[in-house]
Image 1: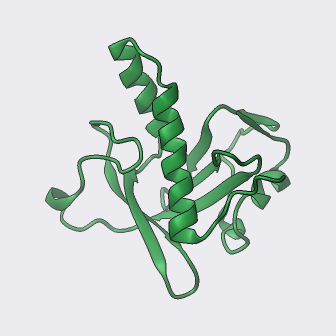
Image 2: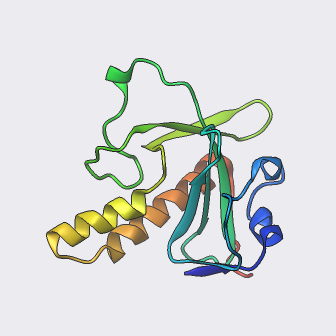
Length: 156
């Protein structure tokens, strides 16, 4: 669990190159208390924002993704790389800039509501979702580290 006191604090979670795109959903009340992670889609449905705290870190990490045009829908992945749950949700490629010349992507639930899906699956099976949600945060952190070079700030 983490707390976001202000919009300025939330902006600092994102890389400087992405901050200009970050727009909180209308009606968002601050401070925010975030249980696992925070995600939202911009009003135009083009960008998806993710804010989480990596295991072992105290500072939130923000990633701005773009929903790229999808190719042949019959070739679309059927399982999210992060929550790995069978889902009726749309799974597709979310991409983000590494730098001005490179983009990376991950095949995930396009709305990033993975945590809710893990909880629902755990509720239906009568078990806890805590371990699965911890693995979800680890996968997010691994993507941030390996694909974007973002290292968690454990000392903060």
